[in-house]
Length: 265
Length: 282
Image (cartoon, rainbow over all chains, first blue to last red; front, side, top):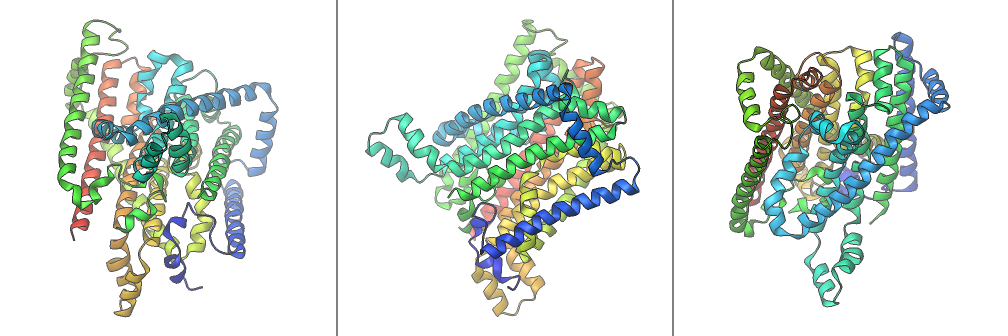
């Protein structure tokens, strides 16, 4: 295949959201390539650990991770971080979904609030953490920070999805006398499932990031604290292992959601 | 317009204020725009008033949340403080470097993925999963590798900026109508001309949206990383002042960061609109 013919001929929306394009053979090549890329990164890590003294080897890091996961103390930190991230995501999704619906359905709400939503989304929200601390205390602040991170992708994607629904959908709902609830559950939600899934995918990893960044700053327990303590104590193996755990969890989650998103038509 | 076809290809891609692309409704939109601006100003003023009145009524301690008038006063002192300008200069240089490196790298990668879609598809899962912000988690690794300082921040923030740029450029170029490229080939354009004169201008809305995201993520990344650990910079100073219990200057710094980010967002949205409206008229 010549390089220039392939992409142009393909429907543009297949990119990123369409089903893994092309023949089975091509899909296989992409899979092999992606896995190969990960292996390459691993080889690079191994090589740099041999060259640079402070970087722990991949295998040693994995061993540390395994032994960490066997310790009750570490597991407690794992639970704290992921429970908080889950809570932040659930609250953020509910809040963002509701606000996104309002913003998508009501022209009035859009005119009044849209510029603020756009501006708030572009803000480095982490600087608000010291503001949150006296209000929500150490335990609640990181959930609120995670929520602030998680709320916007869902809000914006739902708002755009709802706004771009063909008007005939809502006319149909009215013509069959659907209640508001029925319209939401049977018409709007199925119609916006793709932008909704995109929002969910981005929100989940952002919730984790928000919680961990907060834990970097100040907290009692949690993986962010483990990372920063390991860093300042020079325990790079532990630091690497914990970052690896955090990154792989959010990577696997968003990869699975991304694949689901592409299958949904 | 072709843009409409891949609206959800990259979710946060498109300007949130989309309707400016329907030329027939321009008059109504202009009034919507001014109403939006008015409402936003009113909301901000109301927020400031509640904050000020609450502080005056001592609903909360000034050690926790000082009154906006106090913070504005501190802002005035800040303007004459060389330490503030040193912090602002450092953060500004970091953000600027990340924007430049990130958007150029992202643009080149996006063009590369367009020319060699197989390579693009191989990288795609990683780009999508590490979409910008989660990369901050690698910051401690970067400090160990490169050392504490500007380079470690700029490297990661550049990657954060490059990802949306690459994905958007790719989506935009893949959406160029094939007939454009056929035409350019039939009149004997070179590959360079085809890219620069035909493909990129046609993909411009996506490239611009990518650039906007690159700027936003470069700023968010730099500040977040400074906030985690650094030796200077606006993010670092907020943390430092928090630890030193200097609440009022801390709020002044926070206000500066928020206002700068809002101004940046507004400016970029305006630029995008100017370019877009020029297109729909032609």
